[in-house]
Length: 206
Image 1 (spheres, one colour):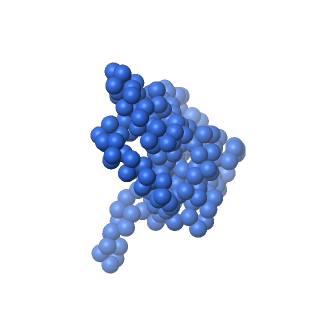
Image 2 (cartoon, one colour; image 1 turned 45 degrees about the vertical axis):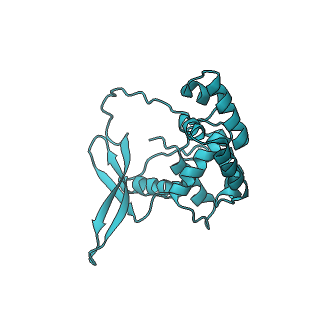
Image 3 (cartoon, one colour; image 1 turned 135 degrees about the vertical axis):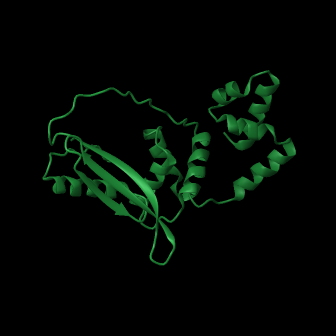
């Protein structure tokens, strides 16, 4: 729906006595969007809607591919979308915060709510030697010899039985290709292990 159409529907539903949460659910938009639209007068809304129609955004050229990813993976975060854009488009130079705002707009435009899956936790028996490893990511600020601070990113692999460790570092956020390559390095360092890569995104079976 166009912004003006959304605005009018919000106004109508509010006048009919619907609460903010119910309006957001009926229109497939966030509650923050409902609040934002309700604060605007018709004149302000008309001016804003007109300005957005003539404004070209950096990510408009990628709208359809991002829409496809969101449709196929409704639980994808903007950070994942940013990562996939960096992978598939080597000349892509848009920052993560811009992608975050654009993904939010596309979710509202196409009514694609973000799905969340609650993880189930349970204790498992201690695995035998060499059968399982734990993988985790982290980042830290480190001081250079010149006295400046830089952000470093790392991925760590820890064998569950022996706690034997392997770590790799980067001076930028990881891409999926980085993670796959570092898994392979870790397997080689630990002496080899059978792997299985599934779909276009990485899944690893230890």
